[in-house]
Structures are given as C-alpha cells and as structure tokens.
Amino acid sequence: MKGRWPITLMCAVLEVSPSGYFHWKTSQGRDSDGPRRTVSDEAVLAHLRAIHVQIGGEYGWPRMHKELLARGVRVGKERVRLLMQRHGIKAKGKRRFVVTTDSKHPMPVASDLVQRRFTPEAPNTVWSGDITYIVTDEGWLYLAVALELYSRQIVGWSLQPHMQTSLVKDALLMACFRRRPPPGLIFHSDRGSQYCSAEFQSTLTAWGIRSSMSRKGDCWDNAPTESLWGHLKTACVHGRRFATREQARAAIMDWIGFYNHSRLHSSLGYLSPMQFEQRWLAAQHQSAA
Image 1 (cartoon, one colour):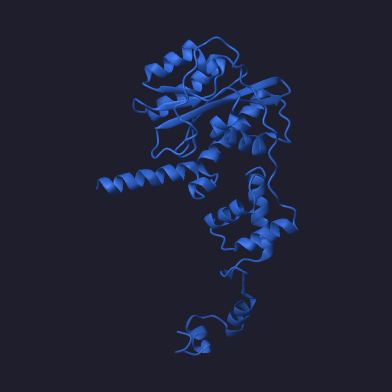
Image 2 (cartoon, one colour):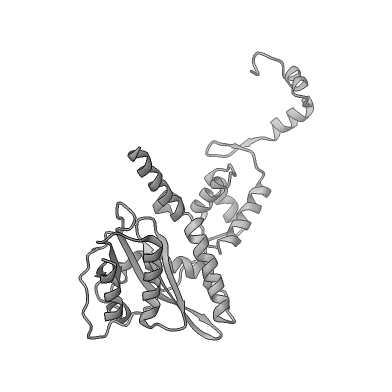
C-alpha cells in the first residue's frame, strides 16, 4: 500500500495529518528480540508494578512477561527483564519448608500408588492433599486442600483453627461434591494421623477413592502440594500480619480464587489451572463431535 500511494494522499483520505503520522512513525522502536515497541517504558513499568502488587510479588520476569502478553501488552522478554532489574521488581524468595505432619501413630498406612508421577493424563485421576498453617494474632489457622494434579487446580479446601480429622475431611468432601469423581480416583497424601484416621479412610471408601501415601518424612513424594504452599506463603502470607483468623481467611480465599482462575503456571504452558482444564474439555468435545 505504501509503495502504491503517497503517504500524504493516504493521510488525507484517512483524515490524519502527515506530521502526526511521521511523529508516530519515528517514535516507534523495536525490542532487542524483534517485536515492534508500541508501549513506552513508563507504561510497561506501570503494568509491571500493578501486576507485582496484585500477585503478591510472586512472579519473576519469565512469568511476568507471559502475564503482560496475556493482558494484551506487546513487549519483549529482554525488555521486561531489564525493566524489572533496573527498578528492583523481583520475585520474593521462598522460605524454608517446615514439617507439620504427625506420622508417629499406630494407624494403618496406605501404599504409595503415585510414585512421584504427578502428571496424570486427565482430570479426576489423581488428587493430592496436605495441611499448612497461618499465624494470626488470635492463634493458628490451618488450611487443608485437595489439589487436582492434572490442572493443579485447588478443588477443595477447609480453613479451621485446629488440625483434627474434620479439617481434611471437609476439604475432601468439598472436592467430591464439586467434581463428582468417578470410582478409582487416587487421593495422595502424607502419613499424617488425619489422613490415616478411620473417619477419613471411610470417607474415601464411600466415594470409591483409593488412598495413597508418601514415604515417611519425604516431602518430595507430595511435591505438588508443597509447591502450592510455597506459592501461597510467598504471595499471601510472608511479610503480612493478620490481626484475626477471619482476616487471614479472607486473604487466603482471595488468593485461592486468583490461583485457580488467573495464576500462570509454567508447567501448564503459562495457563491458569482453570484455563488449562477448559482447554482439555474443549478438546474432548471436539474429538467427540
């Protein structure tokens, strides 16, 4: 088009001033890795700072770059890295793992059916569960989850001021009522007394769920939930003081909503758990059509 018609004629037809066009043209640059720069450094920096606050400082530059692209901000990876480095925007470091499992009990222990195979081929095949704690001025608040290993979606959770069996049972029941899993689903956990209890095991049996447990004292046998706790604590807990359990509960519920719907996972191709599972469902409908 530019080779066939004079710029001044095209500007006249489009009712754009030639000086305005040339000013726009000369203001455009290119990022070092190729794409045309359409957003100023100041605008990109504003987006970076807003995202950094929104996600609790959890993203490093690779995930931050993917988040910008998902929001329609066209920017190169190297530019994102340099801007974050220059302005001190960096991911928070994860803290040391703290053991909360009480495995010193006489109750029966299930075999490890997962064997660190944490990437099932379809949803509702393997879930994992665990417990973590949050400090408040009123005392401890405990969180138990049921994690869908296919999409890494949190499908059930429970927040209570104690670590009794009802904590993990309620998280499991929420997941079961929401997902209605087929018989044969594996629920993987540590050897904690809550998961080994007759009450919890009978709940698994009632839903046709098989129990699987990690080896004693080996947190890597339940790595996905340990990773989840790291993300939660980094984004939502570390550096914050909760005056009440209710205040902590509200913050954790907000984060779970963000995690399921919006947080980008590198292992999921930089999709959120909900997006990843929706893509799987769309593929199933397409193949069945």
